[in-house]
Length: 106
Image (tube, rainbow, N blue to C red; front, top):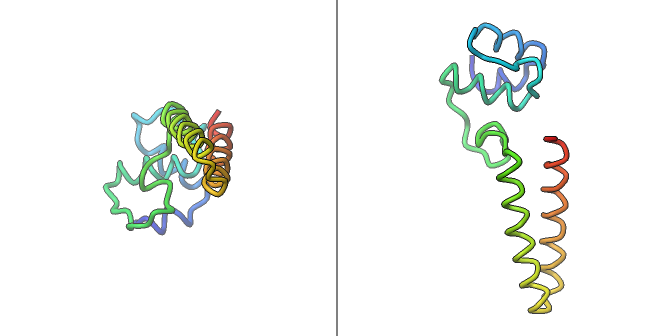
């Protein structure tokens, strides 16, 4: 089994694979990217080098997201002080997307 085979599996199939490991808890509550990440670690599968794979880096937790949002707010304030409207818009959109991910995690 390789990484791409895991990606093509449904959540139900991934849960069945994860249930084979007796020490894993909370498998039924995990989302697809979390299941793939856990199975990749357990099975020792190599992950292809791509930036857009969330499972490659692991799911971000709330604390990391909130820290990143705070950093972006500080950068946004600095851009406002410098009157760089383009940068303010870019940072506003990034903050919005991170807040959306934060709400999905909760």
